[in-house]
Image (cartoon, rainbow, N blue to C red; front, top):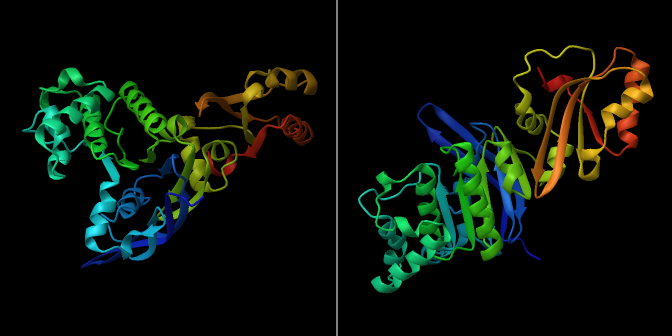
Length: 336
């Protein structure tokens, strides 16, 4: 089956008086229909530039973006406008019209599309019901919380029945509890409406909460991409490891010659592996960090362990984890 979005050798260079900046460099990946796809990277990685290339708000300097098999850059202007209506977008700062009520904000894209007022208002109320804000129809953006503003923005973008929804740091301005509620709403929209969602974020927790697949950007380049579970268990690049390991960056000093990251999933998340190792190897193991997450409804965990100084015993511990089918990797090179 053809992917709903194909990014093929996409690059974007900005030109200024003091030189040029390559924001995005030769990016390639596919997004399948109905997926929730994350694009993640640190500040300056090129995420926001790339997402704007997906609907040609930014025209790529090189390469092509295909949506439903059609190259957006090759479409006549009229067809491009039609294609863009099929791609909704929500932003970090909501972009609501402050002088319009909540209901009128949701009606706005319908007005532009020429929908009659009564039909537009009926549709807008249905969408406010969907996002849980029907009682705020007559309120104005200034009277809403950040989470409520983002719900209005989501309702507004759903008005045109988009097939694709681009979310550019849509939860970055929200507190953790509100972020979770917005992510749950997006998952519900994806599940019930079949809308393909692309999430741009710098937070691995957002990717782990909502995404099934992810692309990691690093200084404008694609570092790696694949299923979120695989990225979590076996990150292949330094960029991915840095994003994953931000959770224990507060550990200022990790003592010992060897430290390993152990990842586990499913039933193994509930097995007493540390206790078993201590009994088998007759030596203590120092747990520097441990965490359990839910990724796509499955329990996933990780630990950072300081191994004993004895090379023989340390090797035995690593071998034990490997025999148990757990992910094991050295972390010296990117933790500290």
